[in-house]
Length: 454
Ligand SMILES: *Cc1c(COP(=O)(O)O)cnc(C)c1O
Image 1 (tube, rainbow, N blue to C red):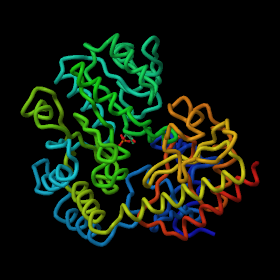
Image 2 (image 1 turned 90 degrees about the vertical axis):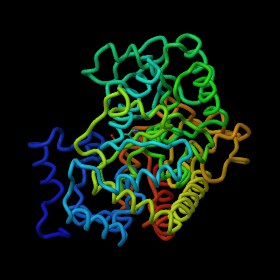
Image 3 (image 1 turned 120 degrees about the vertical axis):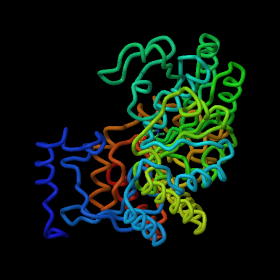
Image 4 (image 1 turned 60 degrees about the vertical axis):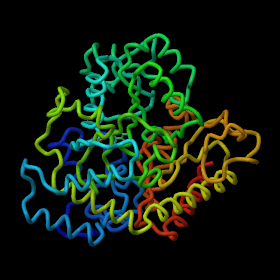
C-alpha cells in the first residue's frame, strides 16, 4: 500500500530513473541497496518513508549532514523560510555569511579566517591548492582509505613506491603528486618525509577515517603528523567534513584530539542539510586566497544565504539544546549494546565509532578472550587484548567480510526497518531525533540478525 497515493512504487521509479540518470542515481553509493534503491517519499524525525510506504529508522542521515534529524526545528525552519522569501541568493555579500563565519571562528581554535564553498570536495580541492600556493610545493600526502571527495588529487591508490589512479580519467601528473600512506603508521609517514619532505606541501587527513569503516587514531599519531609537518615546513590539513561539529561537538575532532591543524575543511553539518563546504585556518595562510592573495578560488553560490542561515541556526540550536550530549549518549549506548551482542554471538566483529558515529565491522579474526576490551567500541588502546586485531588502516577494514555485510546483513536489517548505510565502509549516524527506544529497537534487530546468520 503506497503511503502517498501520488507517488510511484520504488520499483517503477528505479526503472524510470535508469532511463534518465546514470545508473539511476546521482551518487554511486545510492545504487548499492539491492534489489532496488529505495526512493524516499519524506523524512520524519529519525525515520524516512519510501515511496512504497515503508518506514525505516534511518542511520544514513544524509551521509552526515543531518545532525538534528529530518525535521528542521522551528527556529531553523523559520529562518530558512524567511531567507527564501527575501530572495534565494544575490552574488552580493549578506550578513549571515559573516555570522556563520564568526560562529565557527568562536568555537574552533585553529580557525580565524574562512572561505565558504559548496561541497566538501570543493573545500578539499581548494585547501590543497592553497597549501601548494602557500608553500610553493606540489606533493601532498593522504591516507589510504581516507576520503576527500571526487577530485583528481585524491583519486590515487598505492603508496610511496608505486601508485595508480583510482578512477579512469585521472592524468598521471596527479598520481605523481599524491602519496597515500597507511593511517596510524608512523614509520610509513616518516619514510615519506625522509624521501620527499622538501617537496611536500601538505598532509591531508581526516582526524579519524570516517568513510572507511571508521578507524580512530592511535594515540600519538596526530602528534607525529603535526611534528613532521612543522619540521619540514609542510601544512597539516584536517579534513573535518564528516567530523566537524559532530565529533568533539562544537570544538570538532581537533578539539577532542587536541591537535591544531594549519587548515581545516568543513562541510556536511555546517550547511544544516543544504550543500556547503568551507576552508578555514590561520589568517596568514588563508589570505593567500583571492582577492587578498594569488590562489584563485571563486564560486557563484559560495556563501549561499539559505545554506548559511540553515547552518547557523542548526549550530545555534545544537549549542543551546544539549544536542551533542543527546547524540553522544545514544551513540555510546548503541556501541556498548553492540559490544554485548557480539560478545554473545561471535567475537569476529569490531565495534567502531565515537560520539554519534558508529559501525559494526565484520572483521575476520577474534582474540582469545573478550575480557578487558573497550566497552563501547574500539578506542585503539594499546593495552586492549584486541589492539593487534582491530582495524588500524583502510586496508584492515577492507580485509573484513564486506560482501557478507552488504549481501546478507544489510538486507536483513532493512527487513527489520533499520536503514544502515549500504556497505561496510560508510559511517552511520545517530541524530538528535533518535530516541532511547530507537536505540533499543536497533540493538534487538542487530541481535536477531547476527544470531541467525552465525
Ligand atoms: C563527505 C566527505 C567529503 C566530500 O564532501 P562532498 O560534500 O560530498 O563533496 C570529503 N571529505 C570527507 C571526510 C567526507 O566525509
